[in-house]
Image 1: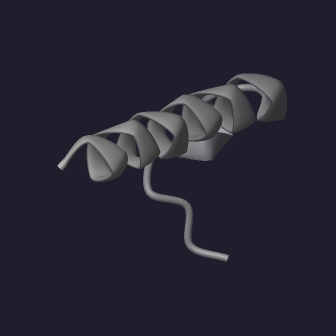
Image 2 (image 1 turned 60 degrees about the vertical axis):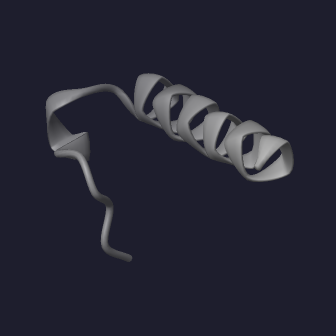
Length: 33
């Protein structure tokens, strides 16, 4: 697994939340355009 941001600096829950928001944001942008 190759995580983009340094996950070791954050708890797993915060890292998963940030990844979820990032994927959600990209999904919205891809659906808009």
